[in-house]
Length: 395
Image (cartoon, rainbow, N blue to C red; front, top):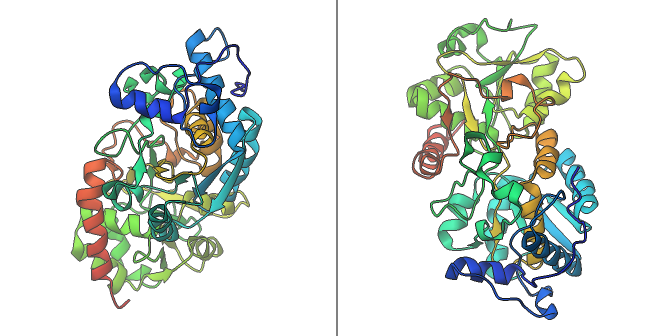
């Protein structure tokens, strides 16, 4: 594990404000006085691997760390995944010397609360990590600050460290506000393998067989979450008639909590489950219960960035600590912590996948729909989601 809190000689006095100014003018920032590294400043640019780093890079990172420590902490508004909260609150302070507070906020609630707090000028959080909702609810309204100018660690900015050698994936139009560091395959459904032998679903149309009526459970697609994502995917790839036939004619049982759906599936109350997260399923699989992913060839599922997209709100109260976190989260250390906790596949080449369920790793040659691609998310996924909600009204 790299020691990102390592004290290094010399200081260029560059903080968040300096980095953003540097990005805006395209020039080189001038050294600032020591008071510039206060809590009112903004992050620094560059850092380096502990082994033989470049002098200027080390100095900038050292200054950013010092400014972040003066602020005392960083507050993350994140999805309610306790293993992720635990990983961040333990590993980040160990690596950087800065405390981290993790607010577990469901994505639907975050979509309401985040804009309200940002508009107040004093949000209670410094970074948002709760899916792609900032792309349509925050970024178009000018509520975000750019993240790209704040990324200074060579292992983060080097394109060769990321799959495809093209660097970090950005999902916003300007390619600087919302990085998406994971890309994971999401199966169409999970089955109780005692009731549905793996591989027995030859085509997605098999879900419409009358024998499965009342035996399918789904997280409610009218709510923000995995149930909505699955329904929007089916609406796009299989059409509105299929969605109507499945959810209405087959009497799909809708639940508000995906854990509830996973439990019903594990107990054998239901044979199949739609819109149930990997985290919920794997908790039961660890107990030896018969759950399996099912991916019929004509609907192999899609790839998604999960909860990984990062957003940096205007008015963040701990800007330097936030910049340290944003850099750290995109390193091997940060991505390993995130990936192991969420079971999402990092786009970094050096993050191991040994703890990731095989069905989450995108397979070569499979034509997945990328539901987090910027144009698709804004121009198709959001309209599809609204269409699904209207279609299933009254269920």
